[in-house]
Image (cartoon, rainbow, N blue to C red):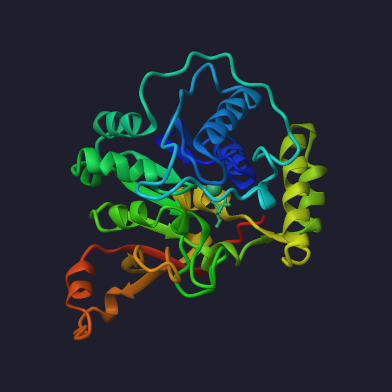
Length: 313
Ligand code: BDR
Ligand code: CA
């Protein structure tokens, strides 16, 4: 089993991502690192601990506390409309009784990148604040990480928090820009891909009949489906964060293209927009933007849509 860290702001689909990761049996989860995002950092951290307990991993997997606010911005705009007032629908799971690790999320990421140099997968399903803090502390983190797969951004489709920005990139655009310009080997699982794999009542019914162990996931998904329905999403919901976990093991869940991603950090109107510059286009001289010409050399992989393998099966 391969070493992985899940960096997350639970969050309903974050909780589903953790369950899915554990369910695959493919991964050695070395740490579960929380970050503020869907709700403030103290709430997402408590949810992460409670989930670790509910899924019976809290004796083995340390749950680290992460950034309590974005790198340079004011505290979070809560996403309670989609995740519930406390972040996990209407669940109120008891806190874990496990000891609280002394290391922060960023410190745990740094240590594990040394212990598993070149091998560690980091899957981030919230704003990239913790990963950015690790990079600001030690830029060599970028070359020690084997692979960073993150849910965030919208390369070609409209955003989900503003017309141009996806929630995680919008929440901490400065962190996203630090990460995407660092040279870290990244795969961006963005709205282009996650809106391609939707879960509806039929998939929910299949999950429900799959066995008694699915109760928590089914209750969370019912809440999430209803939230999407009441916000104009119709009869289905995107599986944003679980898809990122899926891509860690099998990139064929999405269609990937190589290129750079530059994040808008200055404009209030287009804050968090992820501008995708395909490698194939880089021979073009960006006469209008010398800064962009210099910046686009740090490339990674970007999901431009769903892939050949069906993620909802
Ligand atoms: C992302 O925003 C959050 O609300 C979800 O958990 C997901 O990580 C989707 O834009
Ligand atoms: Ca999330």
